[in-house]
Length: 124
Length: 124
DNA sequence: GCTTGCTTTAGAGTGCACTATAAGGAGTAT
DNA sequence: ATACTCCTTATAGTGCACTCTAAAGCAAGC
Image (cartoon, rainbow over all chains, first blue to last red; front, top):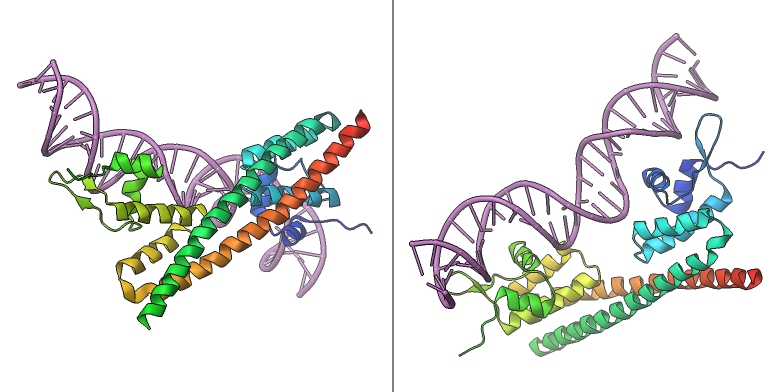
């Protein structure tokens, strides 16, 4: 009685819609998922890890084209570990820049809030 | 001989394309820009500040619909200062959450890089 | 055996934020 | 006066990342 995970299960676990899960598979972000006798998708625990990681890449604004490259490298096996590391290190830099820019912009927003607060105090 | 700023100037200063500048004005992110005798846009220093700030809102992922609300409040004058402050404070929270989530995801990316580095060391 | 509810696929549609095109007007240069 | 280069408007097109629809298959319950 091994646990088989349907597309609905995976949708509930990952938060991605079933549409998105099929879409990601079709465009090659996910390796072809195993099928049962009916042709229904049967997800493994390993598939869940993959999906969780690619969600993190998406959430840090890696474009789908780049995630696809990463997935293809993974499918090519151990010989691509260095390329995968390099791809992630490049992305790491992007994420750091994103954080820095958000922080800079946040400072300006804070200044504006402070300005408005001052105006409110003057009006009272 | 006062300096008049054309749409090209503003494009160069702000980094937004002329298309985008006209688009932002049309949908109401920018208050109607002054025109010269030929109907050409004539931007003021104040317009530049407005544009610079709305670029910061965009860069922190405020949707255009929300920036539009903010711009409309500004146009309504001093009585809306509190509403504008509240809108920005709400956005401030969003930006903080974005930063936090990026940092969490970055941690996972870093872990993956460390994992790959370890694999590379074992292969050597 | 038929309905309900899941699954499959290919392909169409959506929403956001631009980005480009087309048609025409005005100012300057030759 | 004609070409060039800017500007204007309205409107059409693009790219990304989904999101949904349509048509059909299978399987359990009544």
